[in-house]
Length: 449
Image 1 (cartoon, rainbow, N blue to C red):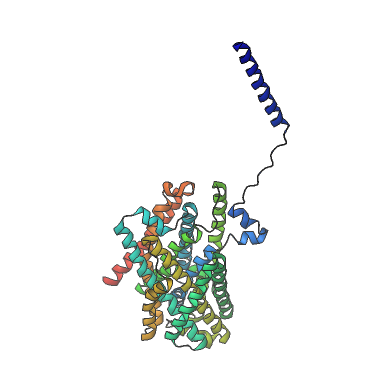
Image 2: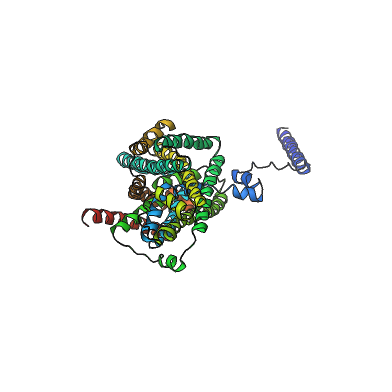
């Protein structure tokens, strides 16, 4: 009896399982649940052209720092005093800038963190504090160049006294920076527009001046110096081109801009990052070269080697070329000062939050870093001399940003599959060695030469 009941129970369970299986087989397949588009897919879906353009931008923000008023001072001084002799420095420093900014941008993409944050996690308290302290000195030197340059631009265009022009610069810089709070794209477009103004101004001046020597330019590609004064300008040009604060900033511009969903998207973003760096930094390099060529073709050619200030360059353009060339120069200078000042403030905030986890209101921070520049303007100190010296200070700050960047970007534990190739690390190390060597030689030449 019990055995019969057991057999019946097993048969019943078997029939139920068979019926369920038949029902599942007969039931229509469940509709596919659409996956949520990734951030990259959403950006690309905005259109073939618009979607691609949307992946460009961070390097154009970084490029502004490479054509700030300090570059005006060093490039014009070099061109007027030595003609095409230092063309090789502009080309070399532009190539250096491309690799350095690529490594910084790649680090942000690979890790989702910026360089100061990664350095904070990697180094001890004393090292972290030392890196932050020197970065603040660099920020003050950066503000010095940008505020003074924008103030000179306002003075040349509208006759505004330099101190008042410095205050106006602060207000406008805050207004531009406020765009970043409304979305990174508005900020990027505003900065890119100002960079375009700088480029247009110098292309106009290059055409207006004319008289370029092709053989002189080609000869200037061969490295050479003409005494300690030219060495000072070499270090100044490099300091004005490879900017320490923008090495920190570029990693922040890419760390969360477009978040990759997987490794394939990360590789795709890396390709666009290379294009962005190539376009943005090439544009900056050409603007710097144009500055030097204008000064060489105009001032050095006629023997006006004493044109050692931005104001004198403006007067010279007006006297020898015309009011249009002088106006284009002043507009380019103003656009450079205002845009680079905004970028400098943003970079300073990234540095402080990254290294020290301190959050200080932008106004308070800006007040501290811009005060020395306002003092210089109020005292009426030689503005171009101040700009050149500020760029030399920046050059001394480059290794403190560059060495941690090389160490971090070559660490597979941090970078994963986007870790540097060996040849990339070697090239970046050579750049760091060149910069450090030039700085040490400048100290030797200044003290014992």
